[in-house]
Image 1 (cartoon, rainbow, N blue to C red):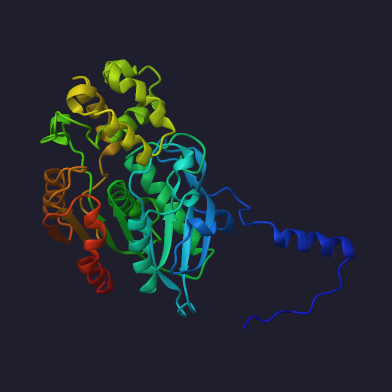
Image 2 (cartoon, helix red, strand yellow):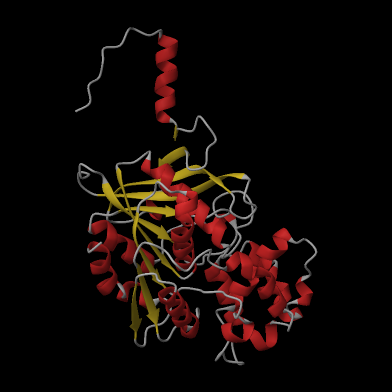
Length: 376
């Protein structure tokens, strides 16, 4: 129990002010330092998780990884397991989410979790892990989210953890877990952690459906094996990459990269979240053949530096799950990533899941990733 000292009597006006303040959202930040909590509020129940004993939406200061200097106010969610916290605090799963869009309203903390993600996250909560779930810069916060910008993702993720560790009963023992864009963010965060957040203790990293960009990445590779008939679910990713590039380079012209059929949808993609945008792409039958112009390769080349990981060698052991039927992030790209990570000297446990697609791999991989994490 905490010792509460006796207080001197306070004037009524002051007591009223204190009581009003206690009913408002709790605010914390006195200095605008990246990794400092600004505010926490109880998370809307419909956006919560069944296995959480407590759940909060947080706002915290972060430094923009896009320009490397601007102070931001980013958001996320924190889920605390049921029961009494261990003496040393709850171990932490840092959940870096998959593609949801680039508009502020798409933020996971403002929306219900998908059934797939809820099942996955509830599993970790039931095992006694707290979850820190950053939204990423521009999702739930000011500005456009810069899709797959590795430093932008990483700094926002790491600052969310720093803010959470000083606010909640959490242990500085972290497993960064991500799927799809989230796998990109998870590995990027692991790579940037020693330089940006050296006091954080990452015990392991878990990835499924991992995008990988290097100087050999090509549009042809991204769309290899894609049908020329019907829609392709990767088209929204290219639209998000274009919008991110155009947010920095105002001189880009959408008509240089997209056919008229697809260009009409690109501006809508600025605010359209991934589910709605993908449905639109599929309904209109947009694919590489009828949507992209040859200059799209120049766009990818110009963005490769921001999409790449800062290192392929990381100290924490890494779990890599690959679905052999993944068409969203081509299996070939994921295998190439795993090979290069191992070649760089990273300790990696690689699993292929036969017949599993991009989404199915997430929960199926738990049979291997849970023992992997518990053993670290």
